[in-house]
Image (cartoon, rainbow, N blue to C red; front, side, top):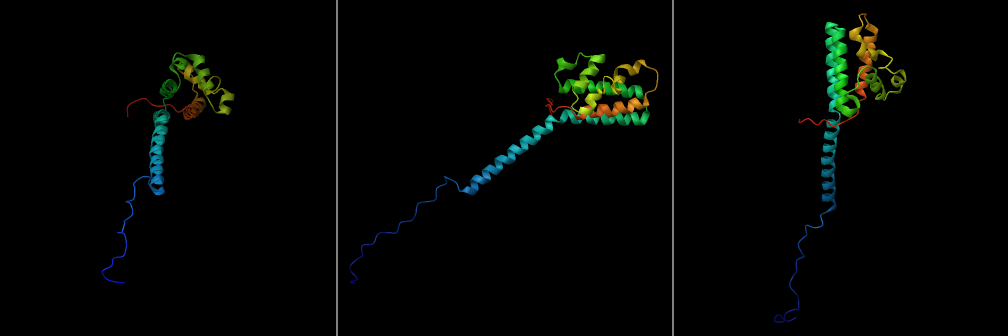
Length: 170
């Protein structure tokens, strides 16, 4: 070959720059993971809000029970449990269904809301220890065994409350 003769070579061409779209599979998986984590956080917060009323009712129940164990005032216990059941019912069920009920109608309504089959058969409020909610203030006799049963019945009823959203501001 002669030095003055040029070879017919073309200039070097670099490849095109890597495009940002479509992203690699790793980025898609990372995006899905982030979406699932955010959705999980919102779902958990939603569940916690839904169970807040039940948790508050059970906390108040425990404080009422503790006060009763300290001072053994059955009258105060029965009145406090009655008020707690009423507030919990109004918070978890439609107000029109339970707010105006009194006496045996109230106790029957409480029994109907029970999901526990054994206690539902026994009608714990209508014919069981729940009668104390309406009659304790008018009877002068001691009902220590019935009061213990009423405490258990109330706790069971509060534990089976349906999950509803607490609309109060955090």
